[in-house]
Length: 80
Image (tube, rainbow, N blue to C red; front, side, top):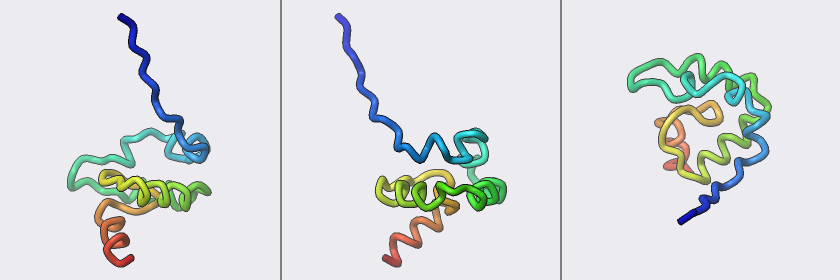
């Protein structure tokens, strides 16, 4: 029996984001590790607003998205 799996297409901005060219290690560090390098890369990325919007809309709970850490995104959601 053959079962096909349909995976959703990635948003167009993801292919243009700097993180796609750097690798996930910076953006999903071990607990307690620095996110400074990820934030530096995000600060140079033109896709940052779209990335942050995506993370907030999809309730991304781990990693650095749109230049914000998990705690920063949680605070932003609570303030809204």
